[in-house]
Image (tube, rainbow, N blue to C red; front, side, top):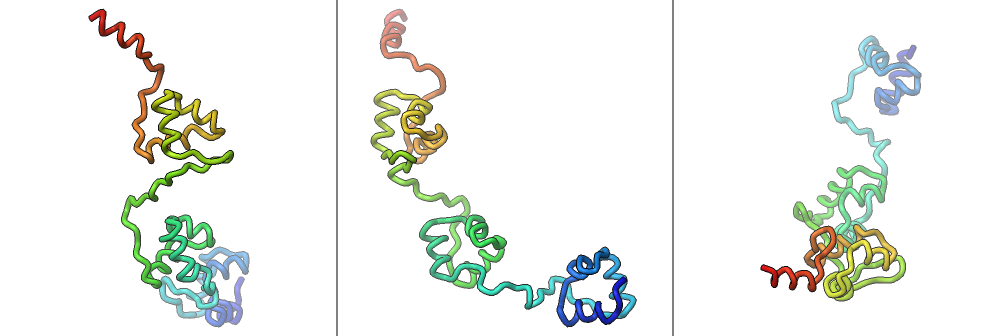
Length: 181
């Protein structure tokens, strides 16, 4: 059970939350609420933030935030994960530094080169392999030692029309069918 002096010290002087006090005393939050009422200790306003628990300067400074958000085009969620903070803190930092928000659905410009573990491939080479040589996405991915999804995403990003799935008819058989009609 919590005595009045301990509860006043923790809640009023140290400005600890009811949840923190309950954890310290190994009691339920309901017990702490009841003790506050019993000892007539005034409750703080909802949403009260103690100055002792607000970390100092854990979001990036303005130049770093500009580089991450505008230069590298990272998402707010990505920046928050990088600094181990909430997305709200990153959003507030963007507003505080007057950094303009990107529009909804904004996507990074696709690069002109697809970086791979064993090197890189450019749009013209990929277009030639896929359209002129007729290689499948899986065959190109195997040749470049990467996942087929990377090749598919590059095709979509560079606006290269994808073929239908399955075996493609050869030009020889296409000409035979036209003659028989």
